[in-house]
Amino acid sequence: MKKLQIGLFLLLGVGLVMQSCKDNIADSFHDYTDDEYEIISQKLNLPIEVFEYSSDQNVLIDDFGEQHIPNRRDNHKATLGRVLFYDTKLSINESISCASCHKQDLAFADDVAFSEGFNGELTTRNSLPLGNTIGFEMAYGGPRGSLFAWDESNEDIASQSKAAIISEIEMGLDMDELVDRIEEDEVYSILFSKSYGDSDIFQHRILEAIEEFVNSIVSNESKFDHETADIGGDVFKTFPGFTEAENKGKTIYFQKCATCHSFDHKLTAKAVANNGLDVEYEDKGLGGRTLNAHDNGVFKVPFLRNIELTAPYMHDGRFATIREVINHYSEGIANHPNLDLQLIENNQPKQMNFTEDEKVALEAYLKTLTDKVLMTEVKFSDPFKI
Figure 1 (cartoon, rainbow, N blue to C red):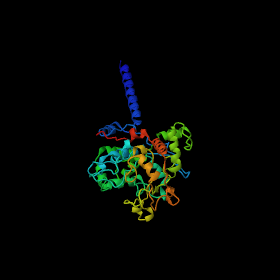
Figure 2 (spheres, one colour; figure 1 turned 45 degrees about the vertical axis):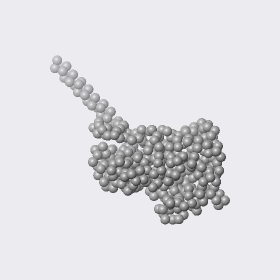
Figure 3 (cartoon, rainbow, N blue to C red; figure 1 turned 180 degrees about the vertical axis):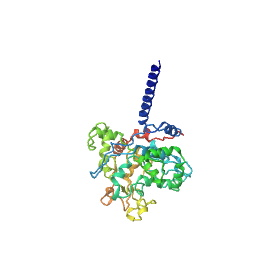
Figure 4 (cartoon, one colour; figure 1 turned 60 degrees about the horizontal axis):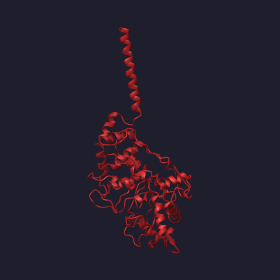
C-alpha cells in the first residue's frame, strides 16, 4: 500500500512538472507575460503576440534605376510607436494626438485645409498624408537633403514628429515634460522594456518609436498594385483588369504627370517643385526656409497614393476635388519664375488642355491608387480602449 502511495505521488509530481513545462513553453510564445498583458489590457487593445510590421513587398526601384532595401521594422518599437501616435498625452492639454491630423480612414491625412491644434488655432499648411514615408527616407536621404514637411524642413520622421509635438500651434508640449508624463504610465514601462531591453524613457526613444510605426505604414493593396503584380511588375503594359477609362488615364498620367510623381507610385520622381499655383506666393515654401529666391513657391512633391481619400489638395488645401487638381494642370498653371521645367513649353506655362473624356479617364486612373485595406488595417488603428 505504501509503495502504491509513493508511486501515485511520483506520478502526480511528474504530471505537475510536465504541466508547468507546458505552461512555460506556451508562455514563451507570447510577447507579454500574463501580468504584463493584464496591465496593458486595462488601457489598450493589443494582441498578446505583437503584429508583424515589416513589409517585404516594399522593395523600391526608383526612377533612377536604383534598388532600395525592403522595409524591415522592429515589431515591438512599432507597437510602442503606434501607442504614442494615438496618445493625447503628447499635447500640452491632452487634447491632440498625432492621429488627430493624420486619420487612418483618410490614408493618414486630414479632411480640412488646415488642421486644428491644441488650443483651436489652425496650422499654416495642409497635413501631408502618411503611408510609404519610408520611400522618401530611402530615395531622398543623405546628400539629396531634407525630406519631410512641405518645405522639407525635417530630415526624418523623428524630427518631423518632434517639430509637431513642440509646435506652439499643433501640440505645444515640451519634450522633457513629455518624458515625465510617459514615465508615470506603467503601460509604457512595459512597452519600452520590450522595445529597448529596459524601461528607461528618453526623448530619442520616444521619437524613434513613432518613426518606426510611421515608416511601417505601407500602402500596397490598391487596384494598381494588384494589377502591377499580376503582369509581373511592368507598369508600362496595359492592365487587363483595368477598365478602358482606367488604362486610358494611366497612359495620360504616364505622359503628363509621372516625370514628377513617378510611374510605380512607390516614391516620387522629384522631391520638390513649383507647380504654378500662383504668380506670387504668400507662403514662400522652400524659399521661406532657405531665403533663396530660386526656391520661392517650391514645395514638396507629395505621394499620389490614396489621393481619392486625401482631399483637400496642395500645401494650402485650395483644391477640394481631384477634378479641380486636374483642371489646374489642364489650363490653370501660372507663369511663376521658378515654375518646374516639366511644366514649361516654348517659354510659357504648359497648357495641357485635357478634353472632358481625358479628365474623366485621368480621374478614374488616380482612383485605382486607393488602398481600402490601409483604411481598416488593425495594426495601424487606434489601440486605446477609451
